[in-house]
Amino acid sequence: MAEVVDERVYTVPLRDAKKAPLKKRAPRAVKALRQFIERHMKAEEVRIGNDVNEKIWERGIKKPPSKIRVRAVKYADGTVEVRLAE
Image (cartoon, rainbow, N blue to C red; front, side, top):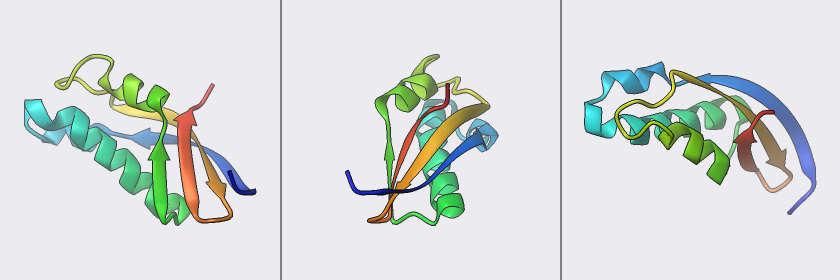
């Protein structure tokens, strides 16, 4: 990986995913997370880690969490990697 430029911890609201139809809620939550990180980290590319994806999908497609706490790491090439905050 490239040099780390910035590292932040966010609590990302995913409640807008609840407005989606039942069978589209978890995918909508993933998109909401990606948009939030792009907006706040000014990222060109966002990589969502497996741990974050599994946390969103933990209760199935119908019931994603209403918020999630993540650690976003921005690299010099403009890529942002998202992991669960500990």
